[in-house]
Length: 327
Image (cartoon, rainbow, N blue to C red):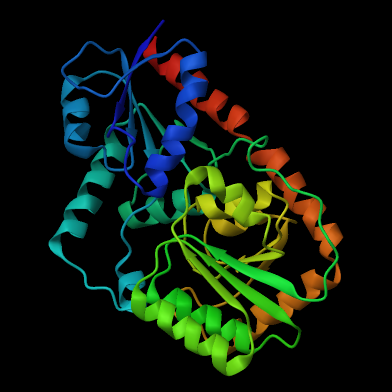
C-alpha cells in the first residue's frame, strides 16, 4: 500500500480541485493512503496544477511525483477578455515550466493542452498521458426527454462578463423559440443585463447563481443544448457533465473542449482571441441543426461520455501511473 501526497488539498471551488475531489474515492479504493501534508511520510505525490505552497517542496524531496497539468496563463487570452495581467501569472507560468521539467510523469487533460505547453515552454517528454476529466455516470445521467416547442439553451459555470455578452449575441440570432438557463457565479450587473434582454426580447431567462454540486445533474437535465463558446479551454468540467447527462454541446473548435465533445455536439471554428459575428452566427446555426436532430445528438452526447469520460476509468489510469512511478 502506497501513501499518496496530493497537493494542494482539493478543497477550493475551482475546476482543478473539483476534478481531484471526484477521484479521491477511486484512489482510496485502489489501496492508496492519502495525505495532504508534505511533512508526513509519503511515497509518491500528485501535484495538481500549481501544487500550492507544497509544490516546490515535492520537487526538493526527490521523491517521485505525477504532475496533473491543465495549461498555463496565456497573455493573448487576457488581452481578448480585458483582464489585467500581473506578476503572479508570470510566477505561475514559471512553476508550470518547473513541474513539467521535474515530474516523473505528466498527465495532460487534453492533447490541446500538451501541444500548447510544449510550444510555449519548448520541451519534449515521452513520459506523459492524455487523460480527460471524468464524472460519475450514475450521478450525471440523462432523464427521459419530453418533446416541447421551446428549447432551453444552457450555460453552466462561472459567468465572466464576456460570456454573458456572447450568450446574448447568440440568443439574438436564434430564429426559433428558446429559453436561456444560466447556472453559476455571476455578478449583479451581468444578471441585470440578462434580465433587461429578456424583457426587451420576449426570451425567458432563468439565472440561478451557484448551486450545490448534488443539484447540478438536475440543472443539466433542464437544458436541451449546452453552449460553451469560450476558446482555448483545456478541459472544462461543465462540458464533461453536460455530455454525461446526454446534453449536446455547441463549443468553440479551438481548445481542448472539442476533444471532449466529439460527435456529442458541434465544434464551431473561429478566431481563438476574437469572437467575431461570423462565429456567433455559426453557433446559432449549430443550435438550430442540433434541435432538428435532438434525439440523435442526445444519444451521441451520452455515448461520448461513456466512451471517454467515465470517472471509474480515468481514475484507474491515474492509479496505474502512480503505482508504476512509486516503485
